[in-house]
Image (cartoon, rainbow, N blue to C red; front, top):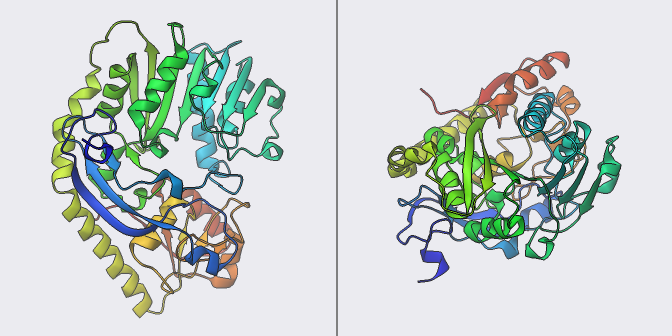
Length: 396
């Protein structure tokens, strides 16, 4: 049986399609300079399938050769005060809970190195980070000398890079052969049963429940719920000690340790029946939610309202391309200065600085992530603007 017919997490056959999207940009966070380049950017398909055996979901049409991770991949959320507070508190809790003082940390998919630097600043003695999108000039931490950065994907060729604490945040969802990859991590840890594993991924439970179509995009080929991620790690030779949801239930965090004999199932693995129910009617509910947003944008256009979205990253790209948005939206706002002045993959919408809105004076701002709505509302008030603030939640 081919890999396209079996679950990448548990190997079971019979995954069923619960969502499809055709001709979507294969990169969402890539920095592009012209409308022509944006509209010509490579596209792929999403065939999101759900595994009734383990609760994992995956884009089985994914082709890693169509994605690019380089120094023009701009993913950081660190310019948001809301996110920075969360990130700092997450690092502090991890350092304290696992007593990382004087320890060595390895981070897989470290991005611009922000979390690894927080861990070093808070007590970790040294670190090594892996990411082809790392940019040395962006690391201004006082603890920068405590870490080494390797601008490459983590793989078995780095198995000799041992650590006390293995960290991987918001990266596993970008990897299609997830069981194979976690097996690579387990092999690298080897017989060091004192090592700790910390992974963070988006929670598909919320996506299924809230019909969050903006959270389904090409780079994210793997989607986990608490039970499916706990089951994967347990079956790959770990004992799962903690699974939690963070950041308004958007993120899952998992903490585990390697074991030599099979571990008992984690309580979070009991979520499968509820997940199956959400998957059963997701296609219909999601389609209705998409149509309601299409109607809302059409209504704003009929009223001659000036509309912008706030958030030019992956959610913004998915929102615009799923709804086939053109002139109905005047641009995408982002507080990340490295994104401003570029254009959105697929649609070519301009990425604006908040200050650009003073000239546009929008009537409506569609917030791509509602957790930032209070922060965005405060910024708009500081600019003297009072547009209608819309979030993407399913209507009650």
